[in-house]
Image 1 (cartoon, helix red, strand yellow):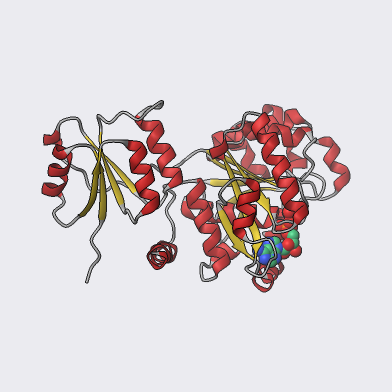
Image 2 (cartoon, protein in one colour):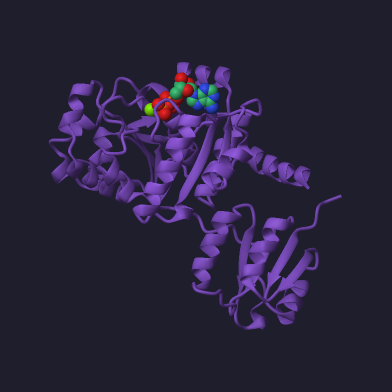
Length: 361
Ligand SMILES: Nc1ncnc2c1ncn2[C@@H]1O[C@H](COP(=O)(O)OP(=O)(O)O)[C@@H](O)[C@H]1O
Ligand SMILES: [Mg+2]
């Protein structure tokens, strides 16, 4: 038996009538006149799609802002807005708007928690989802590992770019960019030796971020832990999303909490911070729910501890997201769709997502 699409309507009886006419196969799970209620219901029951009457007015924001917030919170639900005129009818479910420009900074105040692993895999997944329209910048300028994770140890690095940078046009970046062949990810590697890191100034970083945003749209940035570094400050300022990587240990959590506090003071919006629990394990004394309770924030993803898969992937320079058969790869694909709703997931991930949700219920 094929499953019917569960549709939640934000509108009135006329919107309901229009949906019933145009989509007789749909299962209407409710008609609500308040968008705040739509959010609440979406978190409490399975909804595949919401249909919104274009005249709905959310409190304190535009309908467009509300939809963008909703998309982030419920990336699995597709959103359709119907015209003001009921005669216009309902369009087929549109995919959520595809994100084409974003600067995602992967950071943690602690070293060794998995920043490079997460950034390399997230960026590869994004490149695969966009046919190569993503770049990973390794701005851990003293001890960058991206080249090792992606097996790109021999090509150009940021250092060769520096003398040219002030005169460079966006497409000029290509000369200093390496291509990760299997994912089509563009990569700008950090200096091969730590003594070259002193050559990189904040102005260089600012200019590079701006050129790369114009050249590729989707930027992923790997970073060093030092919160006092000017380079990190510049990168965080340019970020549209920050992925804060933590692990289930007391020090990482304590420092993660301090980082959240600093983000708040810097005026970084809470919804642009995504906490990722890396090396997650059910056996850890500090459970996932305790972590959330302590940080007072929901985890965006839990990436399981899987030493064998990760070490093999690093050894081969082949990100786990290239083959989506492991739980660890699925977790990263889900993280990608949480941060960038609308980017297409591989079919296997879509199926897994649905099964997981249904099983939960
Ligand atoms: N989910 C994971 N499961 C098992 N090992 C992991 C996982 N994530 C990272 N690692 C390992 O942890 C170590 C540190 O990861 P890395 O990404 O280099 O950290 P960072 O960039 O924060 O210093 C590496 O040896 C890596 O292979
Ligand atoms: Mg690193």
